Length: 411
Length: 84
Image (cartoon, rainbow over all chains, first blue to last red; front, side):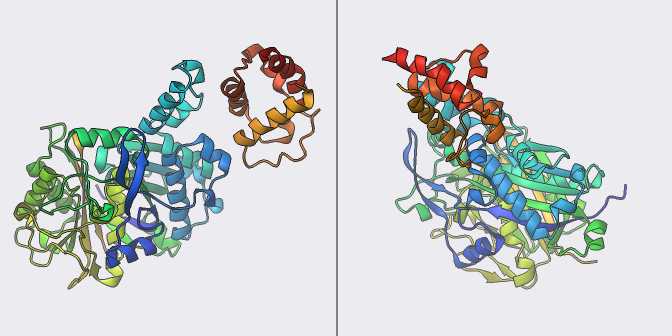
């Protein structure tokens, strides 16, 4: 079956170290972390990644009161992506726009807040907000975009643990190829820093990243890494069929040439290097590329002791003889943005098509020998011989794996 | 409590529920929905805030009494008075 070629024509993002692609990329090249201390209910002080975009840029105060943080992040990213694409939303058939937002989880923040609220009233459920259900339905972040931007096409979330950002992008690609929509907004969001539960859960698991300097708390591949730094964030792409993008003279930022999603089918939490390798290989096969043709592998590594080792094993298996394939990691800068991670980590690498630089992994002071990868870019950006193809890994709990490959656009 | 004091309390609640609205010139005899962007969920918020802040219950059958500032004052003032 001949499928349409799908291209990226716009990016809207907010991350702990930048609220636009330009600012984010600059900080990735300059080694600037976005991690800071926050106080979280019941947890006290924890390192976390906080986004500092102005939500009133695109929403009224009342909308912020009624909606969710994830919804607000999604609206900001959607508006920014459309503006970046050069499309005029007013001139588009909004029934032909699809919204596909990856989420790791949704509803925990709002549920915890309501339980706290009724705890102030003797746990009397008469004080439980009527806003609870629209805030906590799983499609909330995508639905808030639909309501706010008056987009009447399909709008839903893709629950895929920490692989969700990639999965949102993949879903958008597939829906365009099926002809279900003519323009897709795809990617992922996270509001996870506003729930104590995720911090407490990782702490109980022995997987919550901690350091006396919060900017050093997220340290993938380092011998002294001690877990995940939870962050909020969002990244949505505008995606179009190539023929549509060309017809309107759009700036094309890259082409989605390969993708794959598979499952470990082995454990609730522990990853499986063999399945991860198979996932990358299947994405390469779809793209028609050899491993050596990938110039940057954007790793998923979250700085958990076991997870990083497993991913390195998988990367070594696939890219064993690829002297020009660099590997980097974005979580070392921004922590784990959960549902946004896949989309954000890819976005930070895309400008490499233009500037030829591979942004580094930071906070790597003592390499764990088990995480030794031949071309890990550490501390400072590396000028690559060429950057024509980027593979972006994103894995999640319950054993979901995803890989996306973006190529520099060439007719 | 005077009816004007009651209206002031209602306006304070609306200011939190509809923070984008200009409440400097709300006409007391005109339906709130006809002069402000308030929907049914917002009226549920008004009911909830009366419960939370003043322990005043407004049964569903009486929601219509909250239509305007005048009708709010007429209906709520005796309820405030009954609290003391």
